[in-house]
Image (cartoon, rainbow, N blue to C red):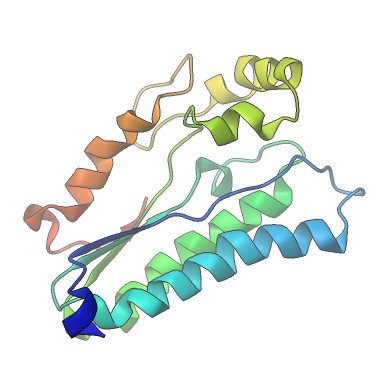
Length: 172
């Protein structure tokens, strides 16, 4: 496989999706769908890529601030992102001998097509952005009054993949 596909020096693994469903209205299909995408999808993506990842490389898992800070009606999604943080902690130990760094970045809402459609309709999306998104912060960053664009995510990602971070594995 390596001969055909090459190698992966930096793997950025992102699987994410969810719906706002309050406790008391969660159904098994919602739970299964969210965990299958966000947990199962991420796990098997990394596992499948592992033979192509050389020693000393970097794996970055995309978590979410929702794994740390409660969001109304978003408990299933938040739980999946808490699993991602746990993966970073345990996989960094699993891959220690290979000197593969595993980091989880946990940004606040990032303005993407998914965020724009998350609430279900345009009015609900506006309400989400006005009421929920501003309360989040980047880890170590200043409070935001709007959701950052996806390109805003590159500085912390670049820092985690830098050779200067060769000593660190973390779940941020």
